Picture 1 (cartoon, rainbow, N blue to C red):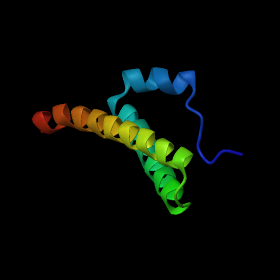
Picture 2 (picture 1 turned 120 degrees about the vertical axis):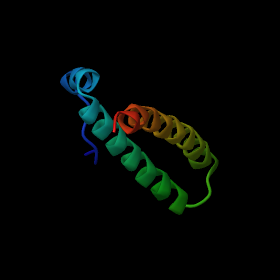
Picture 3 (picture 1 turned 90 degrees about the horizontal axis):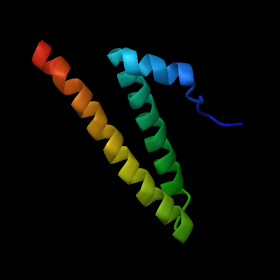
Length: 78
């Protein structure tokens, strides 16, 4: 069984309408991704794992960028 919760259509709809929930959803997925990247890294060298780590890091950077862009309007509003 998977360790993460599947994102439902209802979650996606709510994320489109609720900026705080969208931030929470992205942050939770980024945290999960980083944990998995660490797990893969600890598993040792392997060409397939190396490729997965590279793809995961690229995705993590995109998620982090999205989180920063979401936080920017909040910072200006304060």
